[in-house]
Amino acid sequence: MSDVSLEGDDLAGAVGAVAQRVRGLRRIAVVATPTLETVVAIAGAVEAGVTVVTINPQAGETERAYVLQDSAPDLILDQIDLTARAALPAQPAPAAGAADLPGGPGGDESPALVIYTSGTTGPPKGAVIPRRAIAANIDALADAWAWTPEDVLGHALPLFHVHGLVLGTLGPLRLGSALHHTGRFAPTPGGTLYFAVPTMWSRVPEPAAFSSARLLVSGSAALPVPVFERLVALAGQRVAERYGLTETLINTAARADGERRPGLVGAPLQGVEVRVTGTDEFGPVEVRGPNVFSGYLGNPAATAAALAPDGWFATGDLGLFEPDGQLRIVGRQNTDLIKSGGYKIGAGEIENALLAHPAVAETAVIGVPDDDLGQRIVAFVVPHETVDAAVLVDHVATTLAPHKRPREVRFVTSLPRNPLGKVQKKLLT
Ligand code: MCA
Ligand code: AMP
Image (spheres, rainbow, N blue to C red):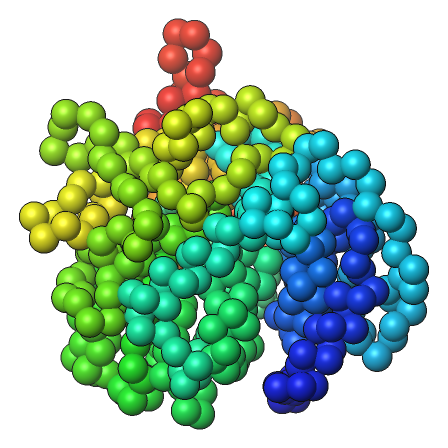
């Protein structure tokens, strides 16, 4: 891919042109390829107060159809070509009733983004992220990381999730710093600040190339201690970890001017409350603050299950506070949520996809520890008929998305079940 860039008045002009075209719409879906077009399209919609539903450009038919049906956008921007203005409506329809979303267009409580995130069972849920959460979170991160317009941020993150979109794109746009999206993760000329998931930090071939950066940040999954230490030894850099969720954006972060210790994800950001409940040494982590989402789109039951009326959000993570006030994440309450390469993937969603294949009689999906991905997806399958593992892997990759595909399929004659017939995943190895 050749280098393309946009800055200053040209950037503002392109964003303003999109804003003008979409203003008045209720929500649009953007197929968020990692391109400048996506940045301009999303920024334009945000400027116009139009909600953006992000779609993974690699989403398969089933996943994409589900997201579009669930979110019912007024317009889908796919393969956006900014020169082809025909892709955008000349006179957008007036806003339809947005009864399912709180707040008026452009107001602080109004929804800026709907980002789909996996649950343990069934299809993903659309997390509704209001404008105030994005603004508050970026400003709190600017404080934690001394992030200024002089920074040059480098990353290679996908643009349909919080990490690459809210932190990695809206962050520089709000704070006025440069962003270099590098395609594949690599150092960039003048780079002062880098964001990446642990898999990317672990794969860096020449860590020394990052030695001139001001701050390296890792998040979306736990950074293994050996990866932290390798960057200390070979780049002279202590990576700053931060901890977040799609529903809460970022909750805690190691500070640029603070101690950065391996295995710790820092202290709560400005304005964010974090508590560990229960009486054990570690317990469920809960979060409250302006960073917390409004709810799941059209799913009040799921919202009520996670977000209490007094504003505390149950993250599903288990953690403890160290004596110095930094949080340590020690695991998750539900092992049916898998983190692979920084993506959250629900075991149930993959099981449902596999069960839709005619050769699959029964299946159980688990995450197993993996040096490269953190966890890798393994599917245990009881087949009806002979089938190649590769066919099933491809089936998941093409109906859902490639990152949700099992990295391994193990054929078995039966699944271990308890007397009530529930699969005992702990016995699967
Ligand atoms: C492989 N490929 C396939 C198949 N096999 N395509 C179709 N069918 C198949 N059977 C393709 C893939 O699409 C990909 O293509 C290429 O082969 C390599 O695949 P894969 O091995 O999956 O990719 P990878 O190199 O292992 O990716 C590792 C990665 C990626 C780059 C670290 O996992 C990644 O981008 N992770 C970021 C996740 C993230 O942003 N999470 C933030 C969530 P191609 O090369 O063309 O793509 S937000 C969050 O968690 C909270 C808020 C937080 O705290 O941040
Ligand atoms: P997602 O829903 O994709 O936004 O993933 C959120 C989950 O990622 C959290 O609930 C955590 O389990 C995990 N996570 C994010 N950042 C970290 C981190 N620095 N250390 C450990 N786990 C993390």
